Each structure stands twice: as structure tokens, then as C-alpha cells.
Amino acid sequence: MKCAKLTEAKLQNAIDSDIGSRNHSCIIPNIYLPRFGNESDLVSITNTGYLWEYEIKITKNDFYADRRKYRHERYLDSESATDRKPNRFWYVVPAGKENGKFIPLIEPKLMPVYAGLIGVYESTDTTIPERERGPWVRKIKSAPLLHKEKATIEQVMKIADVARGRMWKLRYRIRALEYELRTGKEYPEFNESGEEIQ
Image (cartoon, rainbow, N blue to C red; front, side, top):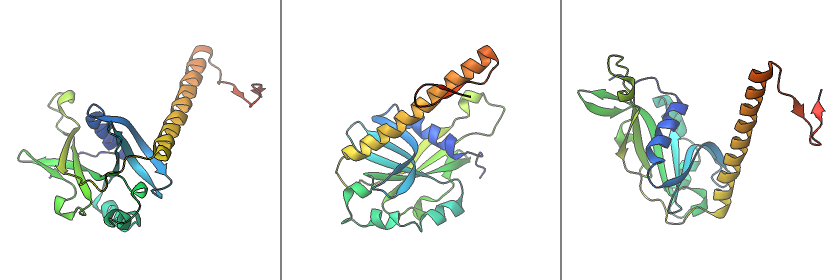
């Protein structure tokens, strides 16, 4: 089986494209949620207020190393605080195709009981049109509902704050690039008083 070389960012984009149009109001990559105690590769909040976490694994070794992290003990423990774990937890891995069958990098039987599995396939065949190469997202094993509590206001505000900060940084970079293209000069930096820094 041959898998296309997919980066974490490409897998994040594929998941965003797939679930963004289906009942998820907020999707954000690489976010640290303090109560979870770890950075999540991707987090989404459904329109009904459930928080889903996606752990992206590019290699088998990365998958096995991740299983040793403490958070997985919390996800197994039905008595642990619900605000310290997502409603659903997914592993997202590259996938290949063999004889027309979708085959993920990690076998579904290796998934822990609390985790679902999503495979992302992208064709390496350059003879087919680019739009038909993918990436294609397929749910291979459903993630069980770990609890029924909705995302806390603290979690929603943290996600909103990270999204806001990233949006403003991106806006600043776009403004700087436009200025540099228009003038041929570097975009000036300003201090908190609004004075240009020399």
C-alpha cells in the first residue's frame, strides 16, 4: 500500500474541509486547552456544543509514542472530570488505497476503546485531474461519546481568544506585505503609544 506524503497541516485542512460544512461551528488547529493539559492538533465544537479533539499521526512510531501520554488514562477513566476531556476523540492518519480499498496507516484494531479513526487519502497518480486526487476523508471507526457535558464557557472563550489572536496577526502580516509591495520599504513597527519604532 502506498500513502501520499501528507503533512499535519494537510490533514488538518482535510478535516476542516470535511467537517466544516457539517454541523461544526468552530474548528481550530494547534490549540492548548489548559484543563486538557496538552496541546491538541485540532479541536472542533459542534453546533450542539460538543467538543471534539483530533490527534494527527503521520507515522506509526508517532502513534505508539502518543499512547504513552497521561491524557489517555483520563480518557479511559469514566469517573474523571468531564471538562478535562473531549466529548469525542479521534486519531487522524494518512491512508492509501489497495485494489480500490481504503487502508489507513494505523489498523482500526489498534485504536483504544475511547478513540475513533479517520483516514485521509490523496492520490499520487498524476494522470488524473488534480481536483480528483483528493484529499478524501473517511471515517473508519466511530469515536464513542465519552460524556454528555457540553463545552464549558472557559473552553469556548479560550478557543475564541486563540482564533482572534491568529486573525489579527494574519491581518497585520497582510497589511505589512501590501505596504512592502506598494512602497518597496519594510512595514514600520509601532510601540504601544502608536509612535513608529526606528
